[in-house]
Length: 453
Image (cartoon, rainbow, N blue to C red; front, side, top):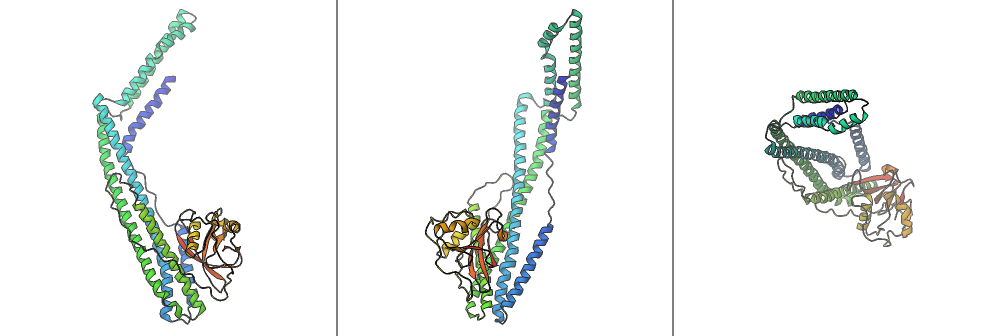
């Protein structure tokens, strides 16, 4: 019965192949989307931080002209709340657009595969006619192989192994019976394939599926186009907010000299720097979008998408180097070196890239190969750079691995933008949550940080 076991898998394969024709109509189910508990916690934490920051700013701005105080608070709200929320919407919209495009591409590929199957089958029909049944033909061939393939070898083995003429006759009768049984089983299996189709029927089924797949591909392409337009709309809204931030920042900058209170100046300066650092996001995002638009990805079937030109964004001016308020713990001595400075050799979009670039803007030379952000403090002395625990405007803050949210393996590096008299200092940093993403933080110096001057 060995050959019966050979026939059955072959039949199973044929049945599976036939079933695939019908299976083309079924698409994969879409996973449900919902905000997670962590999303809720993050939103609550962001709100709490926003409320706390507003309270602290109001305390620092106590006694200040109300109009000026309102401008500081409005710019802070715009930078740290509205723009952040808009950026989150852009991120989600971009992800949705990418997913929709992937689905459109997959639908187009399924359509192309079905069309290719149709072409192949049409060529086969030209040779065999529409009534040719692949399943029955395969079964018949298997039966013929079973009946004829063992004629000579089986007779020889029976003759050489028989001890008498009667043994020979009995063996041949038994094998003949076995062959008949296997042939009958094959015939029965072929007849049981009532769902099998001849080539003409299969062609008709494929043509129907092509019509279905064409509709699906067009729908997916339309969804991808809508998602892309939504993403662009969100990006435009974000860009508009950043334009507003630039106008508010310029207005506030012209008024900051009128502040007499040191704490009020610190509050205004912190908000101004935060807004200026965020403006780099506009520059870098435009550069990335322009680069993406230069790549012609083509369009695979369905409705062609219409490229959308992003709103131009001017290159922001570097943040002005702030003065250090009295009492600040800045260290003395020069900064930077030309030793080992061969240009920005760090990976684009990473924290190290920004640290080099920002110090260059400040006129501070930095070696091109200090390694990962967490290694700068260790490698810098070999180039003659001073390293200590005292923040100074322009210094590179080399975070140890895992320190204050830094990567557990590579560490992190940022640049000091301002040093304040209350022991705090403000930093700018890149690759906050992703390459090219700019961010700012205000930290308290307790001697735990390494600063590369």
